[in-house]
Image (cartoon, rainbow, N blue to C red):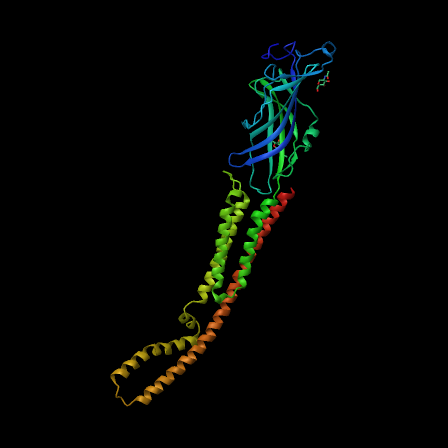
Length: 393
Ligand SMILES: *[C@@H]1O[C@H](CO)[C@@H](O)[C@H](O)[C@H]1NC(C)=O
Ligand SMILES: *[C@@H]1O[C@H](CO)[C@@H](O)[C@H](O)[C@H]1NC(C)=O
């Protein structure tokens, strides 16, 4: 027996390797390196024509185990392997009396897989495992499925179903691929898995939505109390802290950021927008009173008085100091009184103008708030629609 020679009596006959696969778990899905780490139970069975015996002659022994180094092993591998992983070596195979060799082994494989993270955390992934003989053409080593394709596709017995990923199915197909005028047999398994979004919905989406809601509700804080801006800034700060904490949860992809990343950025932009809106309105509210007065004609007239008034006290004070002995004490008192009246009436006007201005600002605030709410609703609606369509697709 030579373990380097394909075990057939007639060298033109092909060795058919029957393969079988059970997915045990999906350990890691890495968007950055575009790879997926899986743990699979792999079985291959072929017929070794040199390892046939009559059990009658050997005390009825029908099956023996042999060292896998001692016999011929087909070079069937997965072409998506990027790393062999931590597969434990199994040094034995089982051979029965009709020459059927069973080679069972667990494989932990790191596979190259083009991952589409855009829909995260509602994404599905389609990763293929292509088994092929690396060297032998289809004339020497052919491949076939051990069990039926449906049985393999729907075999979820061993799958660790409590993790982040849910196994949908593993459809398989047999193909012969022509390379350099030689046909190679391929069996491709497509591992279809779906992420369970609950963890991310609870951890990422809901806190965001809460913060946005609080921001919206902060509109009901009185406009002129000044707490609104401080409140909004604390929300923005809170959101920033939340995002920094959640940065590790997001999958990293080089090409396309997941939509949820855009969602966070837009949420931040909306918070900022709402803050800017509040600042504008408050700034408008506290626009210097002088300019408020200039708004109306009556205020314009008042302003004239005011101008005179501004100069008069100093003048009066001067005159009071210089002309201490002046007999016009009564006149001075009269002047003082009239200026007091002017000041009072001016304050009255100012008050009404202030109230008008406050009402105007409130209306503007309300209008901006509605606009903001509209943007928010459209945005939330679009995302909700997209995400629900993805999660039920
Ligand atoms: C040897 O194993 C193969 C595959 O499991 C089976 O089809 C065959 O019947 C077995 N032969 C004997 C003699 O048990
Ligand atoms: C998965 O990908 C393979 C090719 O890589 C394709 O043939 C197959 O149709 C895909 N399956 C689904 C369900 O998208």
